[in-house]
Image (cartoon, rainbow, N blue to C red):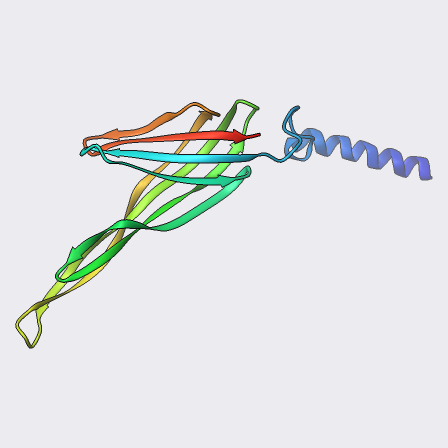
Length: 161
């Protein structure tokens, strides 16, 4: 009876590994955990270059931060946020699949009233804008992922050895 139980467990394990490749051993050369540096750079039409960089393992990542430039509404400096998030899946030692969201909040005036001194006071809200995309990347090789009149966005993913 013990032999039959062991044989059943071995056959079941084999069948599970065949029907669910994610449960099988990872591809050769990717057994050990590796860190990846994801750097997103954007060049604005005026020539200014900005970037965000995060170090992560394979899987999900998320970075929320505040932009150094603010938007002036009346006499107030209103901050804008930057968000970089996504998922990195390693396909091989040289390639990966990257789902990426790069966005920011943009404050805008929703109303305006004069206060008792005659100065306008504005209420504002913030709208989220950005790029959400999936693509295959080659580790160590920059990829232009978006170009328009306001500039271009490039992503570079490198393996840390």
